[in-house]
Length: 162
Image: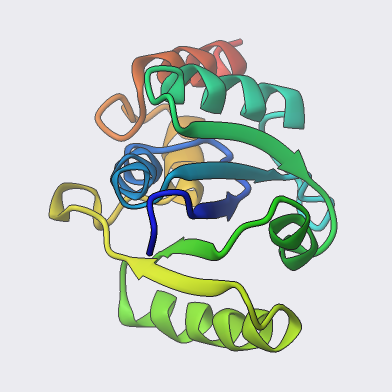
């Protein structure tokens, strides 16, 4: 794909993990622009507000000139097309992830034929990390510092410490 290609990396990012950061950093070397599309996520209850999730993502990706962080609501297909994206990047940690992501990719391809889905696997150090597990462990007072950036860890501790 040409360097000018715009890619979208969608997710809830509640919170953004080192696994997300790994995949987005690597995507930024493959595409001219990567838009981290933070979902409003009205279908689930999030620990952090949309504004907080946007702030954390902007802070961790600030050093990457070709990474932008924006919010979206509705179909990611509409967001990708509106931003001129030619690719959607998705992380796949396991066979279970792949089954789900392959279904999404097929549906997105039928809805937006000009947007290709690209699957990346995280570095083995981050293979097991998920936002859900990070939230659960942090809520139960476990140490999640090894799974998120320091700024994200600080926000988690502020949120979960009485």
